[in-house]
Amino acid sequence: MPYAHSENSDSVRAALGGVIRRHREDAERSLAGLAAEADISTAYLSEVERGLKDISSEKLVAIARALDMAVADVYLEVAQHLGSREAMQQSRSWPDDPRAQLKIATASLRPHALRSVADFSLYLATTQATPAKRRIGFTVDR
Image 1 (cartoon, rainbow, N blue to C red):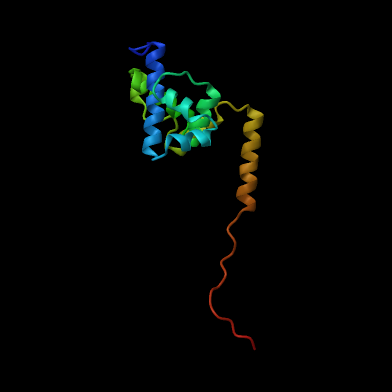
Image 2 (spheres, one colour; image 1 turned 120 degrees about the vertical axis):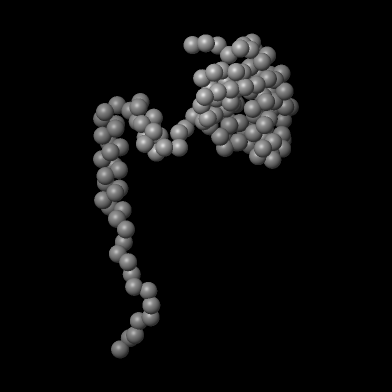
């Protein structure tokens, strides 16, 4: 796999911080508000956004959740920013096509687990039938 053109720890930290800052500003969130929701200090988040501090995966997950985005999308944007050719060709980590989503979601399931999901889906489909339509209008009591 070819590496991105600018690989060093400083450029990776700067790219990650830039992605976080851009999403925070796009969401019109304050630094303090996002830091509070992610349960980290404002100073630490500021240093991460400026590329001065490394971030643990736990804190990155907390920030991504607070920004209402997938961590995979954060990593994809970092790869795009660093110049990865493969990442440049991808638009997002989760496809729009429901069949492709299902294929990705079930790829790691064992056959027994997949059968359980299918059986439960069938159960829901048969028990959650649409109720018979009720007539709307006035009734006359006699």
